[in-house]
Length: 128
Image (cartoon, rainbow, N blue to C red; front, top):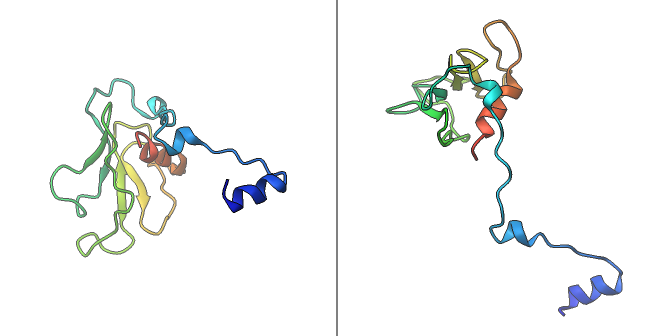
């Protein structure tokens, strides 16, 4: 037993280690996003896409039944301008076509003015 462990034992401190997580144990449960997908949206339909000024090629980074490839470290660039929308929800979501995340963390709203921050965060965190 090393010195720190002996000190902890003498002090009466019980230390529990989470071996399952640190050794590649089970992943956390997936987030259920079914309530955020429009009924009838087919597999492969895009849910979240990048601002097209920020990527080359297909802007979709989260599709129905697909892996989440949205890079949350994405930043605005010269083509998008400062304070840009980084990710858009599509019409395949219950938010409709709307900015899901702005640079600078402005509050995203749906077309009817509803705060969609929580819904967007749920989608952007799903599948990770």
